Each structure stands twice: as C-alpha cells, then as structure tokens.
Amino acid sequence: MTRRPLVGGNWKMHLLRADAVAYCDRIRAEAGDLPADAVLFPSAPLLALVARKLGGSSIACGGQDLHPEEKGAHTGDVSGPQLVDAGCEWVLCGHSERRQNHHESDELVERKALAAQQHGLKPLVCIGETAAERESGATFDVLDRQLDAALAGRPEPFALAYEPVWAIGTGATATPEIAQEAHAHIRETLADLTGAEAASTKRILYGGSVNPENAAELFAQPDLDGFLVGGASLDPERFLAIIRSCG
Ligand code: 13P
Image 1: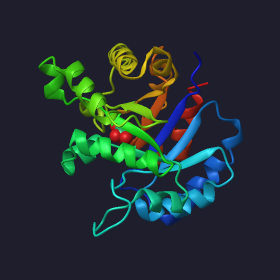
Image 2 (image 1 turned 90 degrees about the horizontal axis):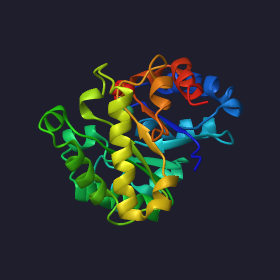
Image 3 (image 1 turned 90 degrees about the vertical axis):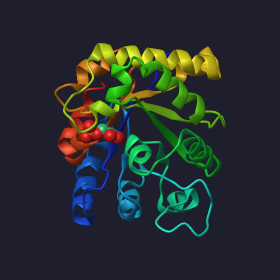
Image 4 (image 1 turned 60 degrees about the vertical axis):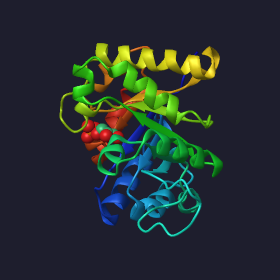
C-alpha cells in the first residue's frame, strides 16, 4: 500500500500578515515540485489570506481548531462553516496544546472530528502521551483511549498525527525507533477500529521537534507517512526541506 506523504505546518500563534504573504509567495513557487501533500495551519486571522494566496496550488490551508457546533454564542471560537468559507480544506482536532491549555476532553475531540467531517473538512486528529504517561508505561493505553474516542463517530476521511507531548517544542525528538513503535501500534489499533484495509491507507504523521536534519531518518520508518511541524514550519526554507525529505 503506498500512501502519499503529507506534511503539515502548524504555525500556532505565530506570524503576521506580511510574514504570511512572503511565506506563501515563496512556498507557492515550489508547489509544483513537491514529493508530498502539504498543508499550512495558520491562526484564525490569517486563514483567508493564506488560503487565497495558496489558491490553485497543491498546498492546502487548514484551521488549528474548530467548535463542534455550526454557529452560536461561543465567543472566540471558529466554526466549521467559517473555516470552509475562509478556504480551508483541513482542520487540526485535539492538538495537545488544546487538550492541555483548553481542557479539551477525548469526547470533545470526537465531536470536533465529526463536525469537521459534516462540514466537508478533513480532520487531522492529534494524539500523544505526556512524559509522565510514557514513564509509567501507559503510552499505548493513552494512544488507544484517544484514538478510540476521536474515531468513535467514524469521521471519514481523516489523518492522524502522533505527537508525543514530551517532544513538542523541546528539541527532544522521538528516536526513529520510538516513533515507529508508536506508529505501528496506532496502525494496529486503527485496524481493530476500521478494518485492516482501511488502516493500511491511513496517513499517520509524526510531530515533535521535527527539523530538516532529523526528518529523513524519521521518514524512513515504514509506518510514518509525513510530519506535523511546529517551529521549523515558520521558515519556508526549513519547511520545504522537510517536505523534500519525504521524497
Ligand atoms: P514543534 O515542531 O515545534 O515541536 O511542534 C510540534 C507540534 O506541536 C506540531 O503540531
């Protein structure tokens, strides 16, 4: 089963409009020649601009979060239809910074993934254990619990990102062996949930201190189908180098 690699750039709460314009001009110039699908996840005020700048290219735009409801009195939130209206194709669901900083439960992540699907967005569902959970030997239980919940509503299509919390923004990238072990486990659990054939088609991205120097070695792992990149995606040259390492 060949899975076309996918690389996401999660800008988190970085960059201003002028940065985004220069970035999109640069990355667009290379878009026809990339070995992976690519998607940028800017923060909400930049979404429409980035989607417009990337329009007609092979690089997509996605939201960093969505509210499970279609509309309503939810100050500060963004709905699925608003993301679609801004030109988004993807949306992150359950990023660990949302789970930790905004107390998002597994059940809420499931509702978000389902809302994304209902509005025609592709959810990129993020899962991953904390350092304490890994140290206590609970990694696989945590991944299974998060997966089980996030996919309970059977969103389709979707992609997954394995982002161990201890590797995010720390420089402590998972070793290729640790990443492969987790990815293989995730694919097995996926096979239990969705069937072996469907599981073999799903892209499972790795995220956590990915950079142009460590990407190729990670990408060589058989169950790793691309990356969700934070810090290194803020520089278009570094992001392009990571995408190219999936060739
Ligand atoms: P870093 O690449 O900065 O570690 O962030 C990873 C991440 O959280 C991507 O969603």
